[in-house]
Amino acid sequence: MLTLSLGSDQKKAMKKVNVTTSLLALSLVFTPLSVATVVNAQSKVEQQLIVAQAKPANQQTIIVHLQRGTDDLHAAFMALKVANGLQEKGAQVTLLLTQEGVRIADTRQSLDLRWGKDMMTLENLFQKFVLAGGKIKACPLCADAVGLTTNFLRQGVELAQGDQDIPSLIIAADKVVDF
Image 1 (cartoon, rainbow, N blue to C red):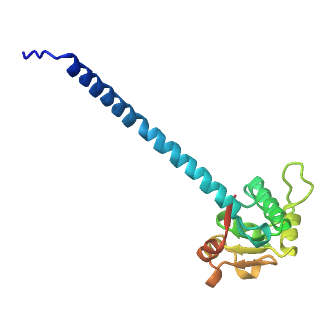
Image 2: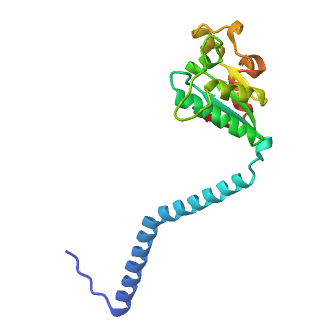
Image 3: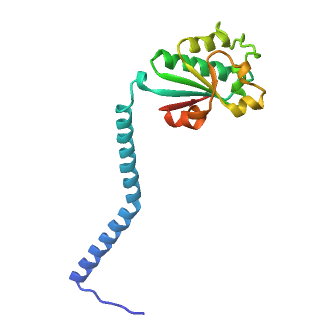
């Protein structure tokens, strides 16, 4: 065992080293918190800038994606109500029907259905959307899977293909809302 005798100047120097080491250790512990706080603050500023740069409703292209049909009236009604509401605010809205959602594009499927206390039928909401200029695109693979051909498409519905295929629609959209 080695024993050292330290003078008063050496003891003061050792205390400074211990204090500095302690501060360094504390800064290493708290640095990630400081960095996280700065990153979080930066993210909030970026979010505010994004909101400030958002396009007015009349310049936005929005896809309302409906995956359910008459098998989930809640989803179908909400999708059409939101699509109509966005359209009323001036947005350019495309209703994109996939999976079971393509069934509401089928003239063989009755849309004389109500959900909840709403007096409007699914047919009323659908027609309101089409008459106001809304576009409706149906997934061709989904349509084929349920036996829906162009002969049975409702007025205003087109198959999503060519330059209006699903990937192209999504890339061109400012927002996609899923139901």
